[in-house]
Image (cartoon, rainbow, N blue to C red; front, side, top):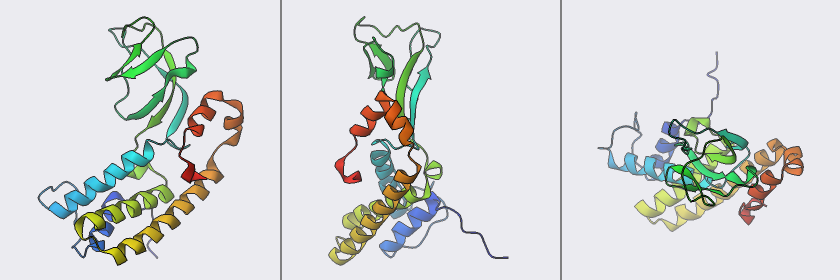
Length: 199
């Protein structure tokens, strides 16, 4: 029976990056003694952070409820990349440190639940495959530049990156819920902040 094709794992992505500089694959991402592998992993994760922070339909929740803790403070979830508290109308809340801050009252004390639009940082295996591919191809280009500075390979990976970006944009456009865009002012505000390259 043929082996089924499955989405790319983070380990496979890192090994693809290592292959681009003619280094041997690794069997784990937890061994920092393999310097090239550790650098490839960190480069990939940095790209994941940057790209996910822009906000996409698959890593964004709208009117997500944050609840005060026992100290009547609202802690920001550890995996949040961005929050927009504007869904809580009439309140002037901002993200400050690890908590939500009430600028009007000049206090961290918030006694009621707050609705926010939130962008999440997801693990590699939680991202859709087209975005995984875009992340690791973008990471390959940066990794190769840092390790080798090979202009011919740079041009090759730049073309790959453009193709991967186009494939991801097609997926995003197909799956985005445009009814939400029309019906939600807060959703529109987040999407309007996206960079122009998404087109």
